[in-house]
Amino acid sequence: MITFDKLWLLMKEKGISTYTLREKCGIDSKTVRRLRANENMETKTLDKLCAILDCRVEDIMEYKK
Image (cartoon, rainbow, N blue to C red; front, side, top):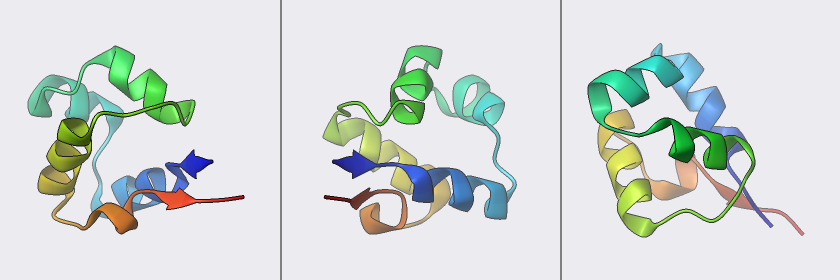
């Protein structure tokens, strides 16, 4: 299973809220809900998140058995 637990930790560390993702970065609320539920995510969304957070994909997600 792919989890986005690291995303929430990194956002907190960088002072970026879900409000900022939605209102200033163009990530819609449905996508935020899907991230919280560890659901499937498009690579273009992952790319956008990495650009916003200035990180690599492994900094925001990980595989857990």
